Image (tube, rainbow, N blue to C red; front, top):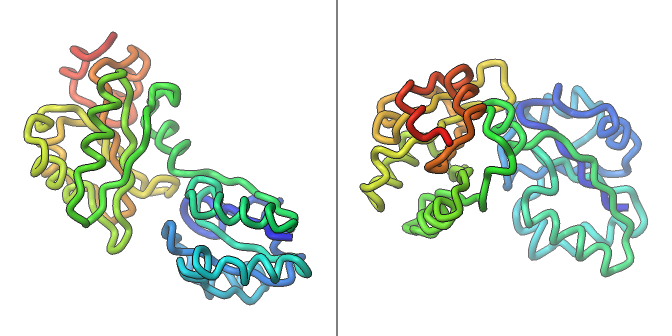
Length: 250
């Protein structure tokens, strides 16, 4: 059986008990750090779980995925994934491929940046449109996603490149270099979601440039032009939003 186990947002303490049980009984345990980052080292995970863990690369999950699936025909193979394992399309593709080849699969879910953002900001999950990634490459695809979401009055969750980890300041600089009209638009920066030192701040994009969010990992939400009054209250309380945001309340 091929089993994907979500590790949660921060470190080995976020692992669910169900995930822990599955890992302890597995024949082999792999760790994927391509799609996200994790605070605990491989050595810390091995000590906590009492298991040998092998890191796998992107190519192991994509070009050489059949090797993992072949192993899962005869053994219980666990792949550890930071956050929730079903958020990245890479893992969904792996599960689909395994099913087509007659291999049993199982998914052990955990917290992801998507539900953490709603919890930390108070933004309502049904108000979000399509998510996008701001990468170091020269691309404006995420700008098109923001505009499409604004056209339907939806928030945009932006994932920031991990190689190396992009900061909110760098993300805002990239946005404004492509779309200066967004300078006065309200956004919410989220740093270290799921950690004890998580930080959330709502402000106009141009002002977020000078706010110190500390170390990554960072995420960014571009707000819809109209927000619910409860979202406003939450952003004032959770994210120290300026009072002028009230002009955007429905």
